[in-house]
Image (tube, rainbow over all chains, first blue to last red; front, top):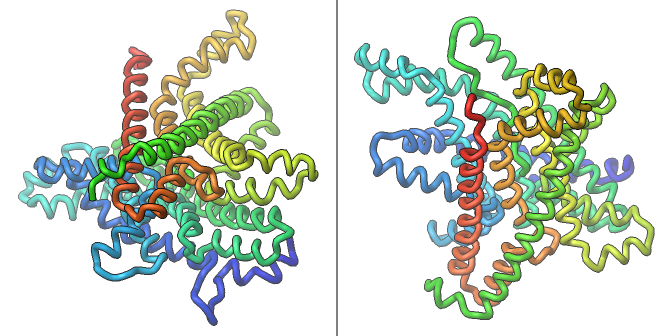
Length: 244
Length: 227
């Protein structure tokens, strides 16, 4: 196992960079950050539509959330592989395809977290803000979202962990992330598949375990801070990581 | 782009075969996940330090590694460790068996967590009262604690059942001819991408929604009135 790491360690970490494209674990992390980072604003919009008073916004947003959550991620990957070039009129890289898919998928899941976060706040918050003369947008921006998003931080971190695992689907459409890199290592070694895929598994394990610990710490810190000043019931949980 | 003209008898037969594989893998891995998840949750409840450590390690291992990596390790890695005759026996029906093992073990960790949080919400006095009435540990689990814990865990279990069903699509990565795999094949043969993907999407969506609906019904049926 040590020799494999010595020979192929850099391939697993950064792919063939700097001679070739960036890959391996570095690309896995970049894909996850892009996926969650871009999905986050979209999820807030989706969540606001989900709880909107207007059916024109509520119904399509609800349909999107259910559609995305009811279909396997790999099916969505194939859809974007086919649809994105048709929609924008030129071919796109496998990496962009994967990012688009992750953004759509995570936006739907995170929208439900944001919605729950907003709904967990007492109504009095909105009512007080509105009676102080703040409009809808100001109420959201200055009163509701700062509280809701703060309470949701651990859940959002666990979505990030799910996303790290979901990037492994890049392997199916040949994005050169960690799983793809491990597969390359395996095809050049051929005789030691167990070691190679054990290294792959343990790498994901180390990264995700660290992030899980971080989510735990964040959650305790937030609960402690809220215990001092607020009576809203605990909503956030780290137990939302999904199999990716 | 006519979905109905795509559904010729031949294509429907291919899709039905794929769907039957998806269903078989879903059911088999669900049984494995539920059985093992329940066993581990009870072990965790009953056991000492060592048992709890083993359960925690299993859960951490399964939950922090993507299903694709589990599948690849089980498909390419584990058979290489086995003796030759066993290897050739596995090669006859490997993909299906291995996807059931990999997905079942992974989701067992999630089911176990769901059941454990169910256990946590049952007051310890329930168990103590059952023991005081003369039930053994397993009897008090079977008749008092588990029935209540399962009802509380039900919504989470339903969510993870839907996830398990969707996860079976990943078995295509190791060549199992389930629904996603056969849809890709049909798309390759006919170049009717939109129709092929639409059919698969509708089938997946309908089954997911049906599972969610059935779960909501069960939750209503088995709700604990006092809670």
